[in-house]
Amino acid sequence: MTVTENPTHTARPLPGGPVAEAVFAEITARVAALRAAGVVPSLATILVGDDPASAGYIRMKQERAAELGFASPHIHLSATATPADLLWAIGAYNRDPDVHAILVQHPTPPQLDYAETILAIDPAKDVDGLHPENLGRLAAGLPGPVPCTPAGIEALLAFHEIPVAGRDVVVLGRGTTLGRPLSLLLSQKRATADAAVTVVHSGVPGWERHTRRADIVVAAVGVPGIVRPEHLRPGAVAIGGGVRYEGRRLLPDLDESCATVAGAITPRVGGVGPTTVAMLFRNAVELAERQTGLPAA
Image 1 (cartoon, rainbow, N blue to C red):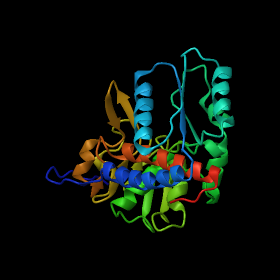
Image 2 (spheres, helix red, strand yellow; image 1 turned 90 degrees about the horizontal axis):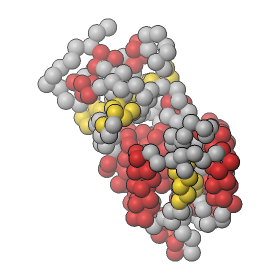
Image 3 (cartoon, helix red, strand yellow; image 1 turned 135 degrees about the horizontal axis):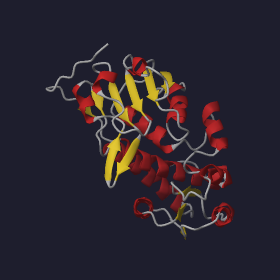
């Protein structure tokens, strides 16, 4: 099957900014309730090395934390930090009762095992939702922090009133930070989920036959431009979850020409990214509420 592009067709944009702002408004009320009860929610960060992009992400998160009323303690380790150094930093935050959520900025230098890093974080303070205990809670449908990008994609679809329940969703990518948890999330019985979810990856010969039948395609591989117009059914919803960077330029998995076929599509910049940040802080405030026993506002 070949899909013919229509240069005059422009897909409906699905920006993430309005979604994030709605989530931040909710978080602001919850933070105010915590502070009124004498609790200052805290998102602690750890940066290893001096990668400019990673340093920029940490700076942005600290600025957003200040705007929302979070404390944001920070530990900066050198690029030559040993596994013991990183475990010390994580352990200090694990033991600190005033720290409710912990973020280790990824990527870490090659001498550090990121999987071991995640295992060292107290699951009750795992703001990324990537500790095996929390991924297990997601699989079992139990409360816990949900990986931020999958949660952001569900929120984006709900905000823009994209029907998901009963629809055919294909996730291209099986990674533990996006593809795999998203498949669990969107298949759960919930008004904003309850979909028939298929997970494929770039190693599946003819993966295009799956995406061409889907109502919603989520590209989550990290291969720029892997999904093109001919890989979509006309009118389908296309979500770009995976990205890479070329210098400062963001390169999404969705080729921008997909807008000539899709019915709705996330923009190259300002799509899933803002919702991921918003969900990070939603996780953080939920962790603070659970640890202090205070109900959500």
